[in-house]
Length: 433
Image (cartoon, rainbow, N blue to C red; front, side):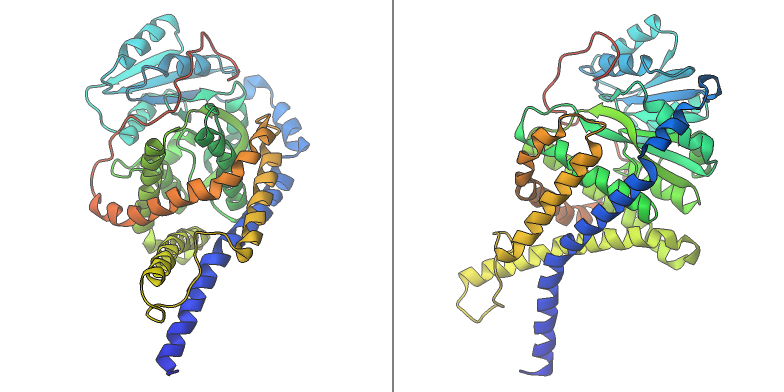
């Protein structure tokens, strides 16, 4: 075997090892980081410290709710926001050029509730512009931003405001979204995903450094910090990822508060799920391209691990694609024409440990979030289908997203009406979801 052939063979074996060991390594890293976050931040002493703050000392809050074609959900969302257990707050609903009855519903509610103000935009400008307009209209320094289908937990604001009060360097606090629609397999899988993947990663990232992104559906911002970085970017598909990086690059701190709950709807069709994951992946690709220069700034080395993780995750998806194509070619071509590799899609004995790690991660995450979202254990069985259903969708979305991000460069990101799953009955008033 020539030196070049030996080098190529070693590189191929290394690629196979990376595809197998990278998710295994990250899974255990996330679990260790999540446990460390729990030990530092989620024990009883934090609850007691927050509850000792007199209500009259809590700063006022502006709740911003950008809406586009949210007719089926707007009233329920607004009523839950108005029912928040907090001494002084206002609700600012931004109707971003909706083409349905959203504007009429918001106006009727504003006539009924003096805490509610409605801003109408003549045409659809996108969520980033809607949030900026709402922030300029807001009377208060703390901006609690939610989506037009989100139902706030009554105690949500108190948990988030606590971080702004004790740490002046905190620019944003992201909350803990919980899935409302759980009647289908996709809905049940996403209940587990938001604990075992989303919530666990946020806990781990806070333990080891910085957050990759806040949750666009539930985040509180310090208005002066958002103004400092030039508000939300109108050309980014995921304005939540972009604002997170802008704030942290400017030296602000971004935090995760698992006790700040909001109840949301998620896609329950494969088509809706694909569109959502492709948008998320494309937004991540846009942010990576925009922030590659962070490696040239040693003072921002706290963001290097996030950039490395984003790069390795994208590389892993393309590496898995390469192995899959080579395996398929090996089935179609005569022996010896391509390297001999096993199927990266069909489980074997080597993947048994990876599967067991996934189940351990799911169990740990459900234990961590069970104090906030009761009944998570009932969804544990359904999580065995998560790698098959969601890994394939997320991997494919990542592969498609990077060339798509290049084509969308400089394009205004505008609203689309997402798949919100089953339309649940409208609530007659506020309260727990």
